[in-house]
Image (tube, rainbow, N blue to C red):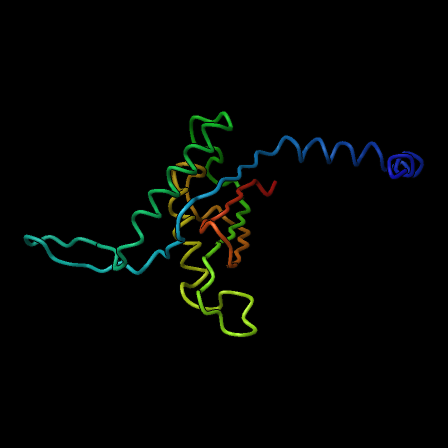
Length: 163
């Protein structure tokens, strides 16, 4: 019915071109299994007279490595063997972080409105995709993130071109 109405109104051809263009845009989705960890602040220490940066959180590195491997695997499965989105391509990223509900959930709580911060969770995901999915995380012009309760603990990520 909708197709017939679009043909009568003359919008059918223009709409089909838009849909074809949308289908050509690369889109990548993947899941990072494990408890999402925030990209904590870096701290400088001096070792043998040289400054080194280390992460303050011990849980950051395992989840960051898992995120990197997940994005690399998803890219390979999509048929890309180099960076999917070259320099200056605007990117839209959607992240959904799922945490195990606490054993004693406060009455009325539906969402995990507790640490870790959503922006630090996103920072870890964005940094782990740099030089794998896109050239630089500065290409991200749209970022949508949410935290929810759900098992298994994981992060669901979708990356697509805005153009």
